Image 1 (cartoon, rainbow, N blue to C red):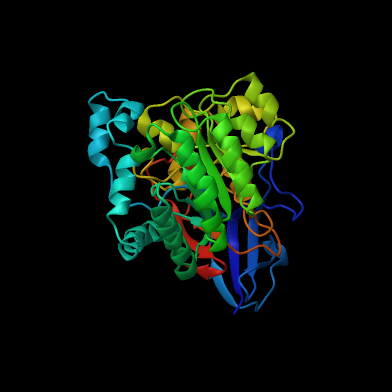
Image 2: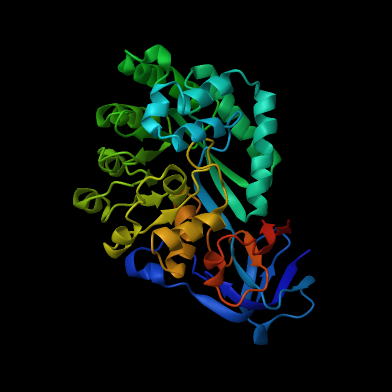
Length: 411
């Protein structure tokens, strides 16, 4: 049965199908229709929308949303939400003064998560991850990218990716899987880092590809982690096996990761706390989406990515949650919007674009997600009654979501 939303206070992010992302000054534009209707067909797609004066009659189930805004549901293009256990004790070590790198050197950080994951069965890992999926759906996310990278052995990386596949098969949210075997160096390869790179290239990637477990290939290219040369080798191997590249880059220093990502036409380069003129020039004119993760900067006390500088340079920008146990234990995209408003000084319109149409692009989902467009999936957030769209990121501690639609079904 079709569904008709009526008396929408304002329908946000109305776009034509040809637009894949927005950049620069265009990010300050958020097309909207006030006093609107939206019609969802019986296949869960957006069939029609417009002013209430042109609202169809007897078009199926009618839901009056007077006083409420309707917008595309969030696309979260960077998470690590499949993990075992949690790391709150490590965070107390940070509070006591230890740095992220010092904790990692003591066997904490990613290596701690890898140890826990190794000791956790596939079924238990699935059961731990499922509530996180359910939580982000309630918080308005319709599509999420989930990375491996807490395995660091062939068997455990495959285990993670199989859990991601099970989540994709059993939950209503759209999921993209990202193989991130190059997340850290396991202790067994502490003195043979190139040997671990060889393992990723010669064993992990072919097995991931053979089981069709991943859409993307990713590398943590940064100080103390994978070098530009190692990243280059891993991305090239992934591309040969049909995996599209993405990059963790410049979280801890100027690493060269942005440039190698652009070289291989990565869908996105993510983190970007350290961005200078060379990085901006590299991204300009490319098809790579710069993606910032304000939750990690907030939680770890790191510098925020220079988002304002990137937009003013004419670049597009996406905002994702980085949901993970060590540096951003939240998948709440509304909170990420508030952090971007408060700490990155972005305008509300820029932020709405950064968490919908631009993150959809960063997940290779532009054709069907990220905007109110005829023919796209009806993935929608219906807000509670609020005075303005600006109130949504401004009220940072308030739950302002009334309901969520995923592919036309109300949750």
